[in-house]
Length: 286
Image 1: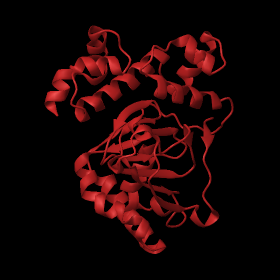
Image 2: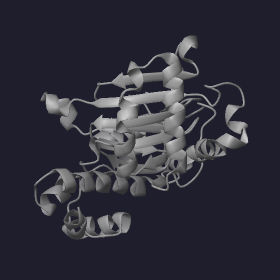
Image 3: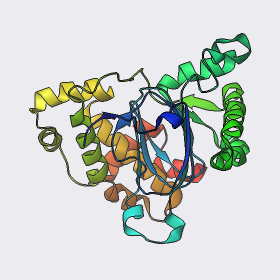
Image 4: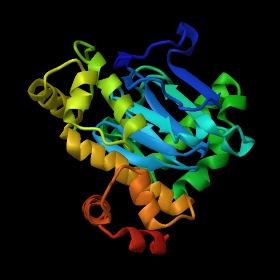
C-alpha cells in the first residue's frame, strides 16, 4: 500500500460528498486528498494518525482534516476479531471543497470565522465532547438530506465549529503533501507499526518493511512524520494504553505488557512523558 492522493468521487460529488460508513478500519491507506474532510465517529474506537499526531479515538470523536493533510483512522483489533454488533463502525464522512457554495464564498467578511477555520485545518482540528454532542443530530442527519439542504446544514455546522473555543490542533507542524513521489513506503511502515506495536519490533524491522537502510529510513521517517521511529512507536503504544485504561477493566500491568512494554518502570516513564500524568492518575481522573 502507498500514500496516495485519494480522488474517487464523481464529478457530481466533487464539491460535496457525505457518506455514512459502517466498515471496520475506516481507512486502508495513509492518504490525503484535495477536499476538506469532517469525520464524526458515533460508534468506533482505535487510533488516528493526522499529520504528526497520534491519538486514540472513541465514540463522539469529531475531527476536521485539512486539504492535502495525510491521515489514517485504524480500528482496534477487536473489530477484526469480534462479530458482536456492538462493535460495528458508524461514521459520518463529509468531504467538501472550499467552493462548495460557490467561488470565493468564504473570502467574504461575513464568513471570516469559517475561512480561518479552514486555514487552521491544515494542522487537523479535534473538537471537544461538548461540541460533538451539540452537533451530533445535525451531522448524523446530513446523509438523509437533499443536496441543497446538505449545503445549508454544513454551512451551519462549520460556523458553529469555527466559533467554538472547545477545539485543539492535532499536528504540530504543517505536513500537507502535494506529491506522491517516494511516499508509498510510509503507508507500509505506519500500518506495520499500528498492527505490530505490541511485539518487540525495532529499527531494523521497520527499515526492512520500507526496503531501506536504517540510516536512510531514519531520515525518511523523520521527514514524513516529524518524529523518530522510537518516538512514534512509543506514542502508538501509549495512545493504545490510554484508550485501554478508559475502556478495559484490567490491571495497569496487564495493559503495560499488552501494548508492547516489558518493564512497568519504562511504561510509566513513557506514559508520563507523553500523557503528562501517570497511568493510575489518568484512569482515576476519568
